[in-house]
Length: 374
Image 1 (spheres, helix red, strand yellow):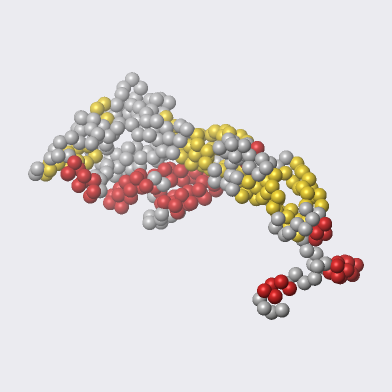
Image 2: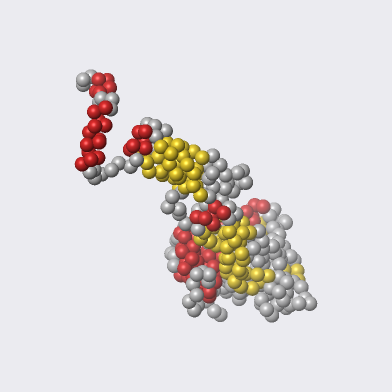
């Protein structure tokens, strides 16, 4: 029997890695081997293996089952069934006898051999995640971006049932469709997943020759995603039903597209607004001026009032980025920054000296007087 792949090794993480570390490793490798950006031979297969690994150990519940199977049985499955629930072309999940708390729950909730918990025969597909990189202009105007994602799609031969066409899954003869077995111990009864159907409640006596009974196949899906105007760095766009196909005809999961936006050298995000630094000269700050500033759609003129201080803000309402909630647009904030020359000519020094003679005395005199130093 072939050994199951080491998903931790595939993602390059330790078995004790946190879920956040696993997600970071997956994102880094997915970007590196994504078929849209990497045309090297074997990149697509590597991308599928990375996605398969994240499908398992990126899900805390699946990871627990994988870890139990991997540490106790060395990555294999002593019952001759599949080893992972989400791998490409994988079979059913390894038999899981449950944790100690599951056993106690079975003892005190079963009422001494009473009603067992029933598991559904279908399973919803896993949600998937991919990322796209947008220019600053695309983020503000909206765009249609192609994405590729390694996933599982419903088998076209059996239409997701897992059974050969003309046949159908049967109720498990061991658990009678409940998905669990009861083992009596005195006055108590302990339940565990059925060894015959692995908890699904059904068995496939004649598996589909195309998918081997899983009801889905590994494939690379390609979509064109409509990115709405106003997305920011880290925005999540949901594509309902475009995720992993469900097991045994279950509903598909969703696909989430994470946006990465190239920074603008001029417009800096500030909440729902953008801020722009506008350099002005000393004379413009003192005497006032009309200056030209950039907007998202061209330029506009702003009035600099006489005596403007360094860091003064001026706002253009409704000229900022689109707001994703659909409630209009944000604002543009312009921060005036007085630029001080560092290397004066003799003519400029003379002008500064003349200016200092007509300005209003010593501006520090009032704080010295308040401090009792003058």
